[in-house]
Length: 259
Image 1 (tube, rainbow, N blue to C red):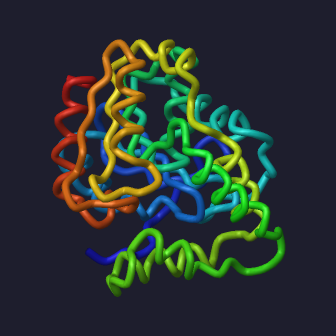
Image 2: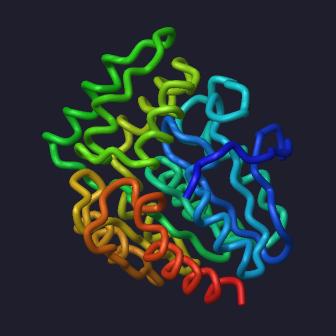
């Protein structure tokens, strides 16, 4: 599909794609991206009769950078938007935000889906991502080459081109701030995960080296109503690269949470 910019609305101080009517599904993107990364999911969920709300993270897309502090600085504005029953779906750092809100036992969260979420990184993985975060500065345009190589390998696709554009256009200070929060987190603790009472879906790619299948399985084991889905031959950007597989599992989950 094409990854063109979509119209926005201001929702609680966040710039957001807000389409269709019906039960609410909120999609949260990862570091360096923007709401359009959910394009295939927006189309599938809205066509299935759901209102789909996709906010841009602070300093990403069209949302201004307000220098949020820590994970709560990203999670609290999203939690404040939830004034009706909703399913939260997050990818990468978006998954960390979604899980944090679900673990707070927000009374409007009917389900949470964590795509490519991190949990208990290995010491090597932790050191590598913290080194990358420390090397960023708040003024220079991001060089996306290393990130794109991790996400797509050598494949030259429309998805790679779109991510390259978004990673280059993102506010450098916002990128460093969000990436630092993500790098310093090891995912929710077991005690936090145990507080999630709503249905929880943990989905990642079989070929994902950083948000591994074992991480998703480990998180699901800590949640009383957790389930795991592993997408074959997929890696970190599976919502974009494997939309049919991701959409079918998401729709099944959303229909269970918001019948």
